[in-house]
Length: 89
Image 1 (tube, one colour):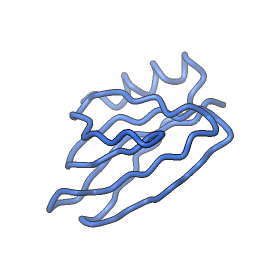
Image 2 (tube, helix red, strand yellow):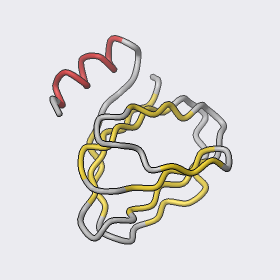
Image 3 (spheres, helix red, strand yellow):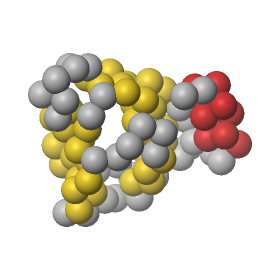
Image 4 (tube, rainbow, N blue to C red):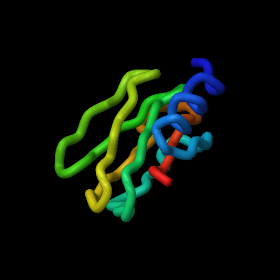
């Protein structure tokens, strides 16, 4: 994955862009933000639950989490997971 390309694309669309890293088993439950969020898996395995729907995004799959919507991210793999995330600024 070309992080610079993603960052440039997101910035042109009004989003920030940063890398997040989590150890195996990490869970971020029921977060709600007042702004839209983008997420792209870089490596590892995560389950993502948005508005009660859970799926396992593939690497490079961009996900939009709308403002005000509860979401949970779980590192379900046996290795570190990394993903890019950005907020509409």
